[in-house]
Image (tube, rainbow, N blue to C red; front, side):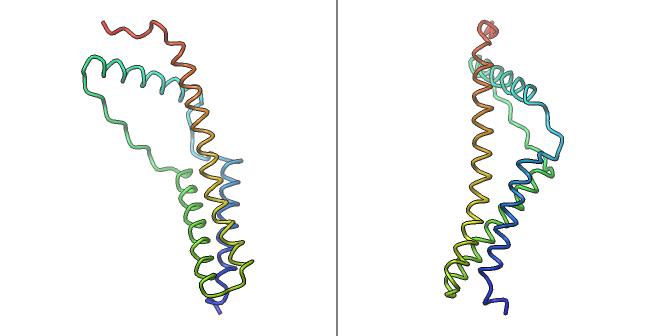
Length: 145
């Protein structure tokens, strides 16, 4: 019966989430992306310009909302499957299913979410380091005139 196998469904959802997260990391991004140099350069120029505008007392412009693409869809599907795995495992635990089964589903779901956060954090940290290195080289380029 469906209710007696929630742990197995949790394992399946967690495995799908983790597999999709790993495939997206290694094979993606699937949507066209600007080069890293372009992204870092644009960010550095935007930071410099916003700083100059703030020092002059001008208003700071609002940031545009990012468009929805296939990469964002994959990230949402991974989070949804991982959350479903955790929920199914918790419900299976409450219904006294075998602990190994519900633990496996929960760990796969937590692993998928953790994998996404760790990769996002590592990439964000790399971009911050690159932007700070570029900003270090902007000596004398800021004219408050």
